Length: 97
Length: 192
Image 1: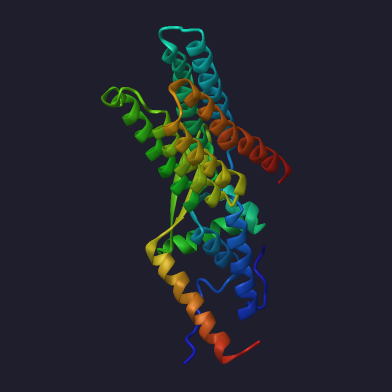
Image 2: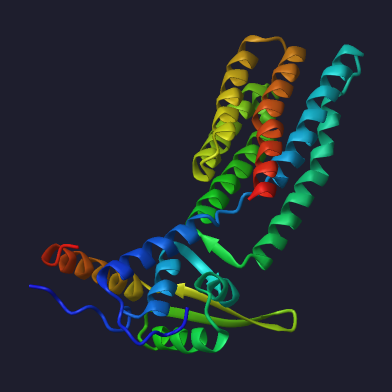
C-alpha cells in the first residue's frame, strides 16, 4: 500500500533544507539561503515550520553584532526524512517512471 | 527556490534530494594551511637537527623548539575557523577528532620519550601515516593517501637507519607526506 507523503517534507524548499541538513552536522542560515537559492523571508518561514514540527533545531546567536541562525536536523527530523524517502521509493515501485 | 503552484512529482523530489546532498558533500573543508605550516616547520627541524648532528652540536634536539609557535598558530587558526565556519559536515567532525587524537598521541610520545631514550623518529613517522592517509580518503585526495604511505615507508626506514640519517628519512617523509600534497591541495582549492 502506498503511504501518503509527509506534507511537511513534500514541499520544494523544506525538502531542499532537510536534504542539506541530512548531510551536515550544522549549517548557517546564509548557507542554506545560498544553496537553496531562496529569499530570506521565505526560508525563514519554512525553517520555522520545520522547527515547530521538531524536525530541526534553530540556534540564534550573534557573531560580533550580526545575528546568526544555525540549523541542525533532530533525530525526529532524520526519522521523518528516512520515512519520506522510503515512502517515495514505495510510490515509485508502484508507479514506475 | 520559491513556492510553486504545482506539487512536486516523485521524480522531482528525488532529483532535489540528490542535488542538495551533492551540494553538501562538496563542502568538506579542504584546508591545506596546516599541511604547509607543519610541512615547513617539521621539515626545517629535521634538516636543522641533521646539520647540528653533523656539526657535533651537543643539543641538536633544541631545534624542535620551533614547533612551539607552530602549535600556537595551529590552535589559534583552528579556533578562528570553528568560529567562522558556515557549516560543519560529518567529515569535518571526523577529521577534527582524527587530528586531535593524533595531537594527543604526539604529546604523549614527547612527554614519555625519555622512557625509550627519545628514540621517537620512527614511531612519530608511523603515527603520522594514519591521519594523513585517512584525511586523504575523507577528502578523496590521493596525494595525501600516498603521503601516508610515504610516512609509513620512511618510518620503517627509520627503524633501520642510524640516528642522523633518521632525520633525512623524516625530511623525505614530511616533504612527500605534507608539503607536496599540501601545495597540490592548495592549488585544487584555488581552482574550485
